Length: 254
Image (tube, rainbow, N blue to C red; front, side, top):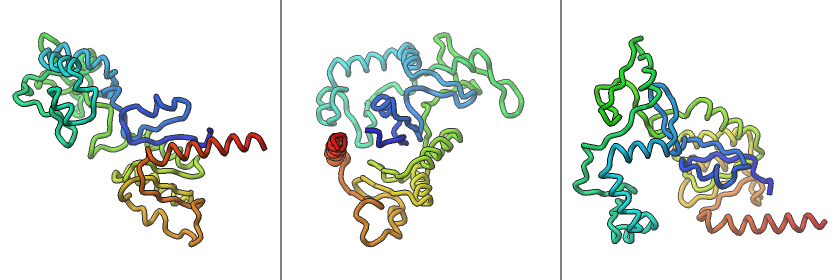
């Protein structure tokens, strides 16, 4: 409908890139579709990494295949998953009693392995692997992590700049399904407020700093200046889209 110029998401599942490829998306907290080396910063596709993980950990691969065959991954219902052999904790972690965690192995960064980087003291890092290619603790580089911003980490400068540009080039901002608990997200809405932009918030429960976002509004505000709705997005957005589509059709006949 041409109403959304850009999207800033805290999700890390690449959903927005797939759902609306024509609308630019800023992935504020990174993404799970690849890994990044914490030393050389090289990216590795998640699919390639998973193939290596499976080869290095046949027990875990066998367990995954059993869960797929049982349909345990076809449902989000914890009780249904448990019936199919997969117990999920309230925080989403999978409970695997007697699992051989101590023997779990993972691959080294291929770039560090081929070209060991320099360390802060000027020495050359070492990347040791076993005969199967698994990273060894004697290494001083080659560690891969999901390409997401972990708690305590900072947003990359380039991502921060793109997110700020998205705010500065917008006429209004709509927050959907976020409490803005993380500073990286809250500061963007604060930036919009400082630029006197219209702010809409659609979220169940409280939102960090929301009183300041809606301060100073005229008493007769009818929703054009700001909107605060404490409802679920899946209840509100479908009707909103239908109404906007109807208005668009009516406008095309005028």
